[in-house]
Length: 380
Image 1 (cartoon, rainbow, N blue to C red):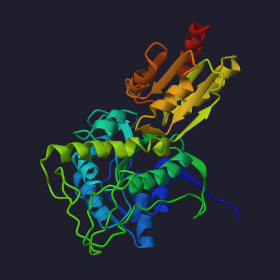
Image 2 (image 1 turned 120 degrees about the horizontal axis):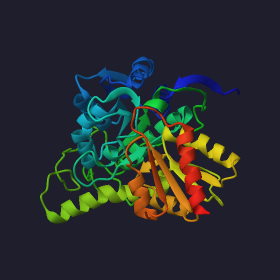
Image 3 (image 1 turned 135 degrees about the vertical axis):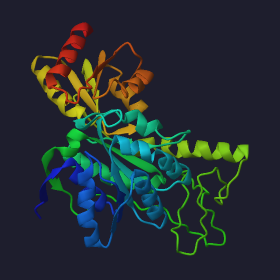
Image 4 (image 1 turned 90 degrees about the vertical axis):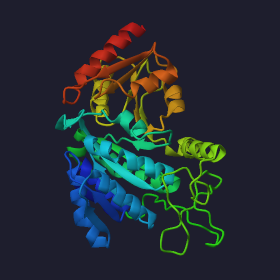
């Protein structure tokens, strides 16, 4: 059977991926450059009996998907930097109440209104630490339109499997570029549904974790008592100020993510074995980085690339392993240097070169090529 072929924007592909994964509820508010995500969902959800709602603001949009998720729905919202800022308190609520949800953030230049239609990767640290307090989080960043589809599916799967918010970090370039995409068949990709209780309602505890640290989740309206709060709570969901309860909860919210790092970590690699220079890239920057790599190879430089799709939790062991033999590591980013700090944290600063751009334009491959050639010359 011939594959279904489409000519899609990254934003459209992300929406289609969420639908493929079983998303049936979207709550959002229009904002450049993410609006196409909402547009696709507004057209497609009614066709399958799903619900689309445009809320009065970004805060209401985040609240709506939390409510829908608690009824058992797979949910999605989309936004850009200013909207992600507004969602942060309720992202924290979803973290502590362990509510599965996916937030698409199509990054643009900031801070504030910035350049609404220009690309950036300035929300990397906001995705990790934007909401207050210690918490685990998953953030994924695709580098192509097809990856936007696949990563949207993975985002829904991870949110359901680990009962956590997942932030899908596109950037304006990936969000608005169009590519030919071969879409998967209905049964081709694995889909995940949240765990549901196996015990009767009388003994059910809404936040008692399983062996994987993740509690089963009972949808509202099916006979299970389920108290939801943003306060620290016991396994029953009732508020508690006890030190032991607080310690156990906060550490579990992080550990359920970190213990699953191997499952969560998505990446691609190209020519790392034997490379003197390794590019560690992600998102839209990986497009120019890949072109620069080919140009450098044509000049005889041994260069490879590790493209991170999962950026939170940061794949420290992977980066250490893939760069351990490199004499230089180059991290190109459309920000002043956010993820490079994590690379330096685990491999040391001596070998790491940060290449940044913050003028609202995508990298030219020659900018990264210059850094590769300079690093390769210094590595001889």
